[in-house]
Image (cartoon, rainbow, N blue to C red):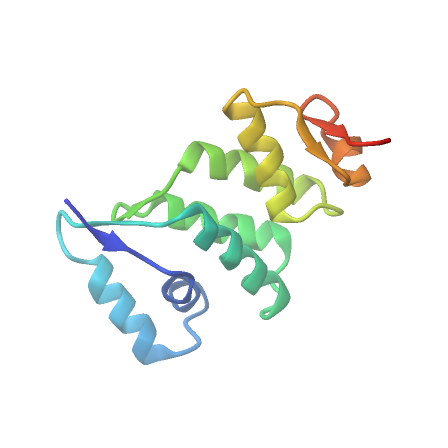
Length: 134
């Protein structure tokens, strides 16, 4: 049974455990038997940003943390798309999680090319993207 959706702050607490009382509340919420919560793609993108920018967690460690989140039985996530995005994100350090997500989403939904002004994105994902020029 889906009981709601979670925002990024709960996931940050779950991973960083930097506010112990909030960490415990999130754990109690997720320990309810047979209950699942949706984790929106945007929450995952924000989580990656927060962990990298505010907690200085390296990309590989972020990837590892997110795999644990994806595997959690109480969390419902578009896991195939997010896993693919995480693999690209860990490999292509010049690109943001969002850019990797856009390219993966375009490929998965067969809506390629992803049209962009981002030359780095096109260099890394030439099959999925196309540079918009004059």
